[in-house]
Length: 255
Image (cartoon, rainbow, N blue to C red; front, top):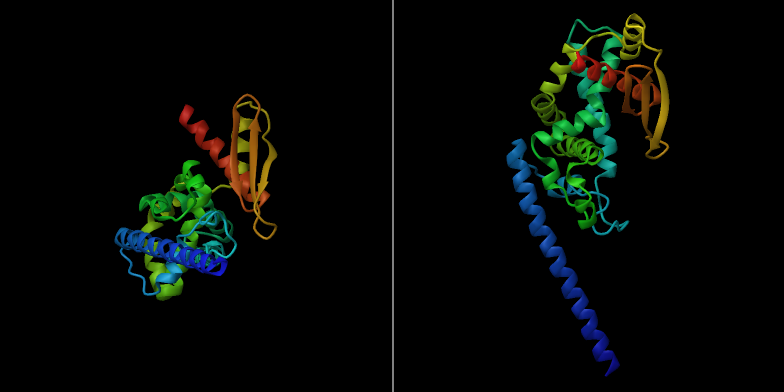
């Protein structure tokens, strides 16, 4: 009698598992169809794009659940190469300005802005708790997911497909960085603060997140008499630059 009950319980669990997998597959197919329409790309390998759309929280964070973290690593490198190509093609840029512009174009905020253009957050698989916490519009999540999507496009369609996607969705970001001052933001902020009789800028590390191989720094710059602003970056130097850039932008809005 006990064995019969055990067998029934096992069969019931297996049936529930299959039903759950089936529901997930249907959900993923609907999400994928919507995303393909939004970015005008059709994926041959459906498994790779499923990973690209799966946040680590999905399935209550089970370690065996494939997610986009490995793809994000690759996407970051593909994004860097494509950005370097486009910056190199602009003859007016020297090495220093190319490096500053590349950092601006590959940072999380830029990737998140790109992701919002086609509402990438609405296509992500994530846990209900993450959704309740606003995960579908978090800059950090959108930035990571956008990089993983770029990696999936590269793996599925090659560099030309990735380049086409990049040219379509990073066009505005590229134009924006070329319209900004070519001077290093920290230097520009210091010069303007001195010329307007403000105190000298000081920089403070507010946060350090992420794994050791890929840290993310949050730094605040403060100019006595003017105000403060924060910036994020993959190094302290980059975070300081973006903090200075944000304060300069805030300053210009006050004028």
